[in-house]
Amino acid sequence: MLHAMCEFISIMFSVILSAIAIKLADDYLDQDMDKSEKNFATALGKGSMLYGMVSMALAASLNTSVSISLFFASYIIGMFHDLKNHFPSRLNGFQESVLIFIVGIFLLGWKMILFSIFFVISIQLIDDYIDDSRDELIGHRNWAHRLGRVECFLLFLLTLLISWLINEEIFPAVFLGAVVSYSTILYYQKGRL
Amino acid sequence: MLWTGIIMVIALLSGYIWGKRDGMISVNHQSLVNVPLLLRQQSLEKGYCILCHEPKKKRIIHKINEQKGRRI
Image 1 (tube, each protein chain N blue to C red):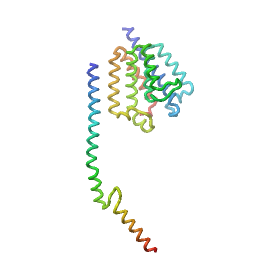
Image 2 (cartoon, helix red, strand yellow):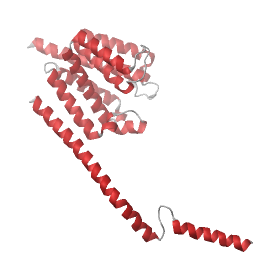
Image 3 (cartoon, rainbow over the protein chains, first blue to last red):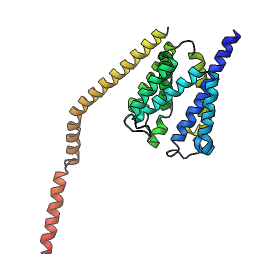
Image 4 (cartoon, rainbow over the protein chains, first blue to last red):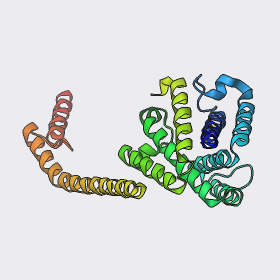
């Protein structure tokens, strides 16, 4: 019982720390477009990337497979908007995504990678659903605009359920960790709503 | 349980998309019929074509020509 509790808590904190690392990396990349104080990278300055790396290292030390797979999945989903753009690796977004996907399958197994991809897609969809009106004003690329608000919400439910189906053992802990980290970020960035 | 949820969401999603698409098509067909009638109705009410302002234009040209004639 105690072991199961420890496992649950370690996965949850691993997800929270991964979410911090992913958020910092995302804000660091968006720094040019978003100069507001709500951007964590602007608030933390040059050290934001380093804090992100420390957070990711802590997450990986708590639970390697969950944290690394979530990070890989976020990387793959983040590339969806730049599939044709070329990056410093001389590969385009699509090729990088496929490469990370294959590496992820080899290192962590298909179940973990597919679970993380569906879970991160669901987070992306609900984030776009919540940020719909704000992104419309700024002109950000948003799935709720492309697909429609109701479609976006239903797809969020669908991808969340699929990720639950793929890995039922870790889903509750990952879901709770994601809810805690996402609501904390929303609270910090109150102006977004 | 999970499978039931997934099937329900897929059914809702496909139904919504189908209904939306169907609605858009029927609205398009309806507007194709309605718009010419509305244009004709408004043009008749105002006394000139609301797209090309035809009689109004003719009146203005006639006035300009009249003014030119007086100057000469």
